[in-house]
Each structure stands twice: as C-alpha cells, then as structure tokens.
Length: 260
Image (tube, rainbow, N blue to C red):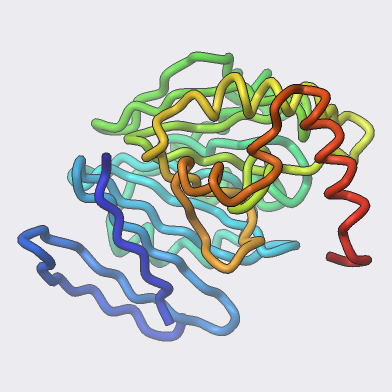
C-alpha cells in the first residue's frame, strides 16, 4: 500500500523544501493564494506525487498527478481555472500528457478548452471520446502510461453514463461516482441508481481496502479516505442487495436538507 502524507497548504507565496519523516524523503510544496486551497498528497511507497486544487462551482477538485521522477504528468478534471495550477506545473517543470475527464458534467469540464490552449501536446481523454477534437476515446479496462505510472480506466456509469474512475498505485480518482462518506447521487435525467450499484459494488468495492479515494468534490470533513474506512462509515456502501441500495439512495435523498 502507498504510504500517504496529507497536508492542507495554507496562493501568494510558494515554498519548495524537503524534509524527512521516519526515513522517507518527502518533497513539500506549500502554496497559498486568495481563496484557493491546494491539498498536497505525497505517496512515497511506491513514489508518486498528487496535488489537489479545490475550487470551481461546488468545492470541486482538480488533481495533478506525476511519478516521483521524470516530467510526465496528467490532470484529472478541468474544474478550476488554469491560472491556479500553472505556477506549480512550471515550478515542477512538468509535461502534462493527458487531461483525464471523470465525466462530462459541466463543473468537471468547465476549463477544458483553456487547459488545451495553454498546454502543448496535452490530449483530452474521456469515456467514448466526447465532443472534443482529437480526444482519446477511453474504454473500460484500458491502461494509460504517464511516465512510470500505469493508470487503469474503470467505467462506472450510474451518476452519469460516461462516468469513469482512474486507478493508479492504489489511488482511485472517482469523480462523482464515490465520495468520502457516500456514493454519488443519481438525480439527473441520465442517472441510474441500479447502474451505480453495479459500478460501485461490482467494480470499486472489489478493490483493495487500502485503496485511497480521491473524489471529485470536497463534500466531507476530510478530502480523502481509504476504501475500507469508507465502507465502514457509509450506509450507502453497506447495502445487502441492489434493491436495498436503491431504497437507501431514496432514503438518503429524502433526508437531505434544502441546499445540502
């Protein structure tokens, strides 16, 4: 399992430093500006770097991921303006190969064209290809290479037909399929609770309990959680059958407060 160090970095100033903890070397970036928050996660066994940018329409997360060595990187979801991630890309001298889209709801694709115009040689990758010119059409079970990282594509319809999750090094980027404390919702015209059940229970919940979930929104008191911990704390992940899950989803929606 990757060892994970989480830290909310208090963007006006960029500090690049190194420190050692229990014999492991961590590269630390503290970045702070205006209302932007960057949540820095450093996965060190095996080595991987993840930077999480919070913003967008509704506490959205955009992720920048790279191996510990080498310039190749990928972005997960274009949910925050490119100006918010540009400086870090330049400091790290990263070469972004892919913009990985978890699904095509507007809050996750809002700045796609801005990213494509600002970054050379980047390719948008999403399930079915979408409407973007020259986009890479992803399929279930496909594997992408970003430097030494292998990113597995898992098609997870339910919240939306083109929803996918991206798995690399026991880190799972789930978009709106799975959050900390619950599953995604199924309230849009193309949502389907039964499809979501099959995606979550037959695909995601079969992964290692040590897998760390990186959701598409910051909807909880903590930004990430292991799959095992999430199952233990979420009634929506404890259903005994598909029908039970559908009932739990309906009960969850009834329990929500207006605007909650």
